[in-house]
Every structure is written in C-alpha cells, then in structure tokens.
Length: 393
Image 1 (spheres, rainbow, N blue to C red):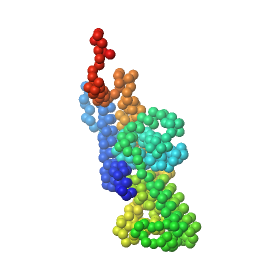
Image 2 (cartoon, one colour):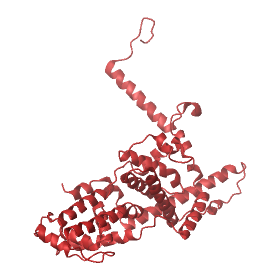
Image 3 (tube, rainbow, N blue to C red):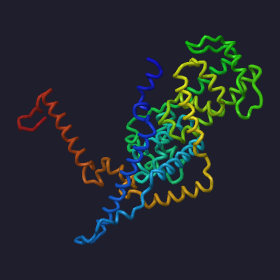
C-alpha cells in the first residue's frame, strides 16, 4: 500500500476534502438552514408572548430578523480562528495542538452556523479537545484557569456537540512532518549525499551542482556558490515555510482542498520557487504529464496561501468585524444560547426532572434494554427461587 493509498483511506480525505463548488454549496445550505431556524425560534417566542386567543398575528414578524450572510459568517469564523492561534501561543501549547484546534473550528462550522452556536463558546472546547487528541492532555480545571470568565462547565458543555459536528473524527493530517522530511532531503542534496527518485538517473554530485546553479529567490542577491551557502539558503526557506504553515495554511481553506504534501510543497513554492521546482525535479521526470499537473496544483495552493488574512486585522477590518458581531448578537438562535443548560437537560438529573431526567425516547429505549437483559438472564439461569412463604430469594 502506497502513501497515497493510506491518505485516501483517512477520514480527512473521505469526509473533509472538497471541491470549491461543493464547499460553497455546503456553506450555503448551512447558512440557509440556520437562518430558517433563527426566524422560526423568534417567531415561536413571539407567539408564546402573545395573550392566548390573540390570533391576529400575520406571521411576518420573523422577517424582521436580519441574519448573517455566508460572507459575514466566514469573517467571524476567521476572526475566532485568529483568536485560537493567539490563545494557544499564549498558553505555549505545541504547534500541532494549535493547528488541530483551528481545523476543528473550521470543520464544525461547515455544518453549523455562528447564528446557532457562537464561535466564542465553541473555541475553548475546540482547543481542549485538540489537546486531548494530540496527546497533550491537561486537567480541565487548570485549562479553564487560563481563560477569563470561563468555567469548567462552559468548556465541557459543548464537547459532545463539537464531536457530533466533527462526525466523531478527530484525526487531522498536518503538513509539518512532510516539511521536515522534505528539507532533510534538500540538505542531503546540498551535502552531495542525496538520491533522486527511482526514475531519476542523476548522481548525488550532479544534483548538488544543479542546486548550485539555481537562481536566487527574492531577497537574495546572488547564487549560492558553496555547500555552506546552499545550507544557509535551505535553512532560511525552511524557517519561512514553517511560519506560513503555522498561519496562512491554517486560516485559509487549504486543508479542505489539498493534501498535506501539496500544502507544504506549496509553501516552499511561495518562499523559494526555484528550490521547490528543483525538489520536484528530483521526484518526477521533467517530461511527465504528472509534473505539469502537479505544478498547476502547487501554484493554485500557493496563491491561496498568499491571499490569507493577516494575523493582525487593520482598522477597516476591525470595524467590519465589530459590525458583524453586533449583527450576530441580534440574530442568534435564542433556543441554542444556553449550552450549559442544554447539556444538563440531556443528562440524568433526578432533582430537576422528577425522575431520571432523560428524554422520553432515550428513557424508553434504556428501559427496553434493561428488560431484555433481565429476560436473557432468566433464560440462562432460570427464574428467581422462592422460599416456602412465596418470597423471592
């Protein structure tokens, strides 16, 4: 089984890979569904507030709710992705936690809208879940202490909701390992020790000579003339590419459109195009049709990374975000605002729910399961024994 086969069997490829058209369609459907839910919820509240018997309402009040557009939703989600990066950096958590938390947010809001669940309430839970997924576990109490006015209940309440939105798939394939492996190969070529792909017949010395002949990238005045200068060039490109992966690659839709290997190679293409083209030459023959197709993909991905929003919004962007946030405050679904209360209502709570506190269907299902289990036990061991007075033992 090849690496491509392994990736195609992953949930990231099967569930979270899209074409631009399918992704846009999914977001449009989510926006329409959420807006309909918001208007229905407000209409229901208005009906409940009306005096009984007053049926003069014409049902047009729901039109007063000005819901977010798809573009506004994406801007507010993008802002909280930025906040996630800042928070994880503040806590000094590993890069893979930061990258996974952002992808959890982006995946969740493919089928959920900020109008239904505010990103401010989902973001801490996404980070906490990412910590567990990436084997960087912290106790929820110590994690909550890093956040202002956030309790452990606020973090845990949306957790199951988030896992549902993620379709219970927690694996995120990142491009970081591929970047490290690729640059190790480039360093080997610079030292005259690298080997090309199976179809590449050039020697290690010839590959190093080709590297020395590469044109310099923007910002570099002259070609590298020694192995030491080549290594300096490679190390500089590595540092810049890593920063792109930790910011632009996370804030765009690159993970939905491209594979991890395409993403990391695109960052090198963005930073040092001659170096990226050389690396591709060591893997794919120049006359191969696959190479031309791959170059087009890398150029498209690099363009996407280049268009990434900045880590620090400018004055106009901040003004727009404030406007959207105020609009969101007026069009949130009132039935979905209390996540802690919703979570408690779904759990067993004898004091408040006069019994087992479960939804009627869930309670009935569990009762049937208990009865079935007891019946199976009787069939296996026989009915309960009785003493002379007729009492079961």
